[in-house]
Image (cartoon, rainbow, N blue to C red; front, side, top):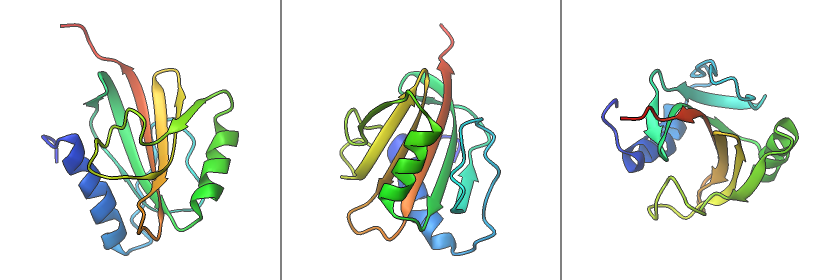
Amino acid sequence: MCAMRVPEAVALCLGVLPALGLAADIDPNTTGLPTYPHVRRAIMDPITRNTLGRQCTHYAAESGDALETVETWYRKALPGAVESDVNENSIYGSYFRLTGIRLTQGDDFLTVYRLPSGASTSIELFKCQAAAAK
């Protein structure tokens, strides 16, 4: 997983999280960004990765709550964040057409989305800093 490209990481998050099936599969969120209270599965990436030209820690979670409910919660949890469509300048490329939002605050951002045929809401938190100059 350490040498994984973004499309492969997304496929892992979209494919593995729902397939895990165990409610006890919740890693703690160490990003410092707010954790949605009704998470049923979550994976905390143990290393930082280059994401959109920044070094980011990544927390991927899933909730059974409606997309609109999770979006509303995050809008309140991150007041002043800039909201955009999750597909705009997408980190997921054109591999998936998602329904949801991206909230950006400083260098950090999160995405809340569903796949068209999805039965759960996906949450991805990215705690970032500028990539080191070479």
